[in-house]
Image: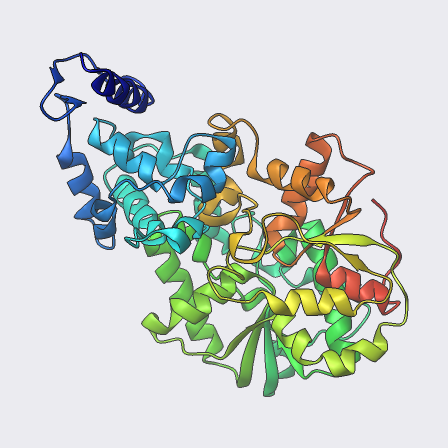
Length: 433
């Protein structure tokens, strides 16, 4: 055989052999310099491409740009190009664990020359898998059932959604109690209402809003999950049910703007609620506070001697374009030394919680060398920072768990930006690692 063809054959065998279970035996085609794959399966590509919003799956031309930026590939074996290749060679995405590993972080879409859109493809494929009776991971199933029954994935009763208010130390108006128009309707969301570390950030943010004299109120027990992560996990019907209920609730009250704690709620209200009739002016809390920085900065009276780094949430940054506001707030805090991680802003890494990943940790652990949150914590530690700053409610608990599991407890603390600001305002005590 011609030496150049031997090299081509070697590369081709290495490439095809990465797909477990594919038979690469067969005749060598000397004319085209490639092995004939007898089980080439375009119908598996077409099955995904025929789904509503799935058509771009067929546009992949295997350039591979998506793979090095895919956060799951960093800790496993993933990426749109690999999913397409596997479908070519007989692996049905709908029956594969790969269906549930994508976090819809959008970093692949950022670099794809063909605009293969996994943010559209994956929810469509997951929905089709659910509707066709395929088995879904049990922990995801539980979160979806809790959301349908209780209005939140944690399975907590609606009456407890506003319970955190009694510990806020400042008035937190609830709309059904005050019955008056407000400027800012604060959409607290589920984890900031129920999870202990989410509640810490809610208390800090309530105190900041109060100190700034903002005219705000919350829905309390009338609020239900905004539903964006459930939609991305494949439960579009559940998302539409939640959205319609929330839109009906909001129609009872008068307000000028919505401010959200959660970037996933921001994404839902901006991009998907309008399709169902819910048109609102929606802000993430960091954008609002950055706008108020001239009034906020004089209140930051306590220097914080921390070396901090910041994690860009996928659904605040890549999905909704906000990179500057969190950094402006961090850098306004006296005493702070700010350092960036290698992967930041547009190329930021993913915590692993998006696209339903918040409820798939145990499942994903069986298919990855380490959790995405652990990879990110190690990157934060490598900067020499003692504090990892976040502004998405999924991230505090995920990263605190990862700090422990990577052996960095006592070396790295995790804090929401709201907690740091409130600490610098003298409203909460000093942070400990």
